[in-house]
Image (spheres, rainbow over the protein chains, first blue to last red):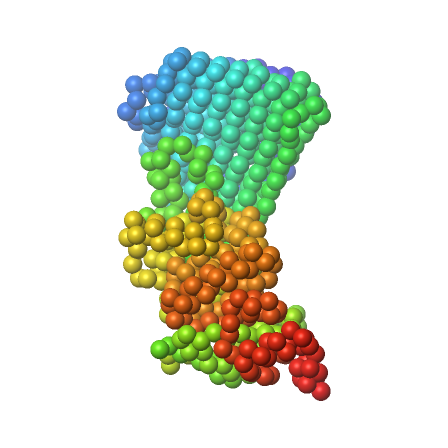
Length: 369
Length: 253
């Protein structure tokens, strides 16, 4: 395969886009995109080797297996290796004009110690749909999610990455937004010893809008990295990136990197990105790096915000002074922290499921209704 | 009748390089139905007294006691004190993002009452309490104290007082930052609560203007971490006319 020769015209656009693993040098941890990652614990993800392909279960007839295709590219070595190894793609095909409030629910299935996957979500024109991608694997996995949102469509994708135990997950998620289309790309990340999730977005025409929203829970000694790249390559599009993370444990580590590139032709765009981290204990470390690169000043808006704070004991005191027991008070504060992110999950049942999952992980009992 | 009794209370706070004693022997007895004002200059420690009664972890009680009907309060956690019937209306209520007023109030009422209030009755109760404090019903959908004006914060504190119905309420500078209309509304709220509940009220204030609306039986002058003089409402008039100077110079002499 050929690497797409893309001159590094900017600091933020990926230097290499290719589906050939050999085009990517072995990461050492000194590269900008790997500088936070504990590369020593994921060396096997950098080795080209045969690996089984993840299966799926879904009640929806819109989900099947299909060709991987070569219209998109990996942006790092593990993704290229996974793409090289994967036997077939899991394809979610949403036809033109499809309109349904019922979510297309897909669960990834893997039994080998390590597996690769490639998921293509192809949404036609003027469709309205929700996809739930359940990624609660006990196995190591690597791969790509590729989303095509057709012109005028409104697509919501909820990626639930609820890893188990010592498993490691290394994923890339690239979305291409059509003219006047809207994508809500939501990810909920918890569990697993190691998670690296790199969502990227580009636009295929003007008028597109994207919300990239994440809630993550980093506990114990877990490592979670979210590396977002929004490529504003078309005029009059908008992007809104919001990630909120709660960290606990002795040595958990979260990394959020939000890269936004506004190209010269992308006039009239509006972009905002925000990351907030809540430290529930003294041990965790949260890195938060927003980067905004503007090649044009002719934009409607461009901003970012980032803050990491300890759990506020004054909030706890206030709630307790109203008779609310400490564990319930903590519960309210953490739930309150995530509430605006969870509100992006339009579906009430799904929202409740996610909230219950987060709270179960924090070890909180169910709140009274 | 209930009694809140504070005896020779000493409390300190950690400061850089050691501890600083802020309460230096406070004694005070508050019975049901009684309204007592604690008045003092800035930095006298009167707000610390309020926080120590409520159990704020920042302060360490080094000696003395607080009892409620003979039961040790200092051994209770913050929430246990509230459930035992103590309430602190705070001078600077804290913002709690993402937690709506309605959710907060119901959770607090459920905790204090020991059971969830029946929904229909609860909605009516909240609605009436809010109306009497001239609060917009939309207020309950906002997040706790987030973006509240000074007046809204104090109304929200008095709303909680009305709904949680404590045995004793400590109002920490509830009058500060209020315009005349808001002060009147808030004071009427406190008076209405007092009239219907027979609770004891400890009114902590720097200024006498709230005493035009809420009449205390006893006025304590609080200087340098202790009560230096107690008297009737006339004492407040003297403070209004002459300020704290006489008491401050007594202490420093």
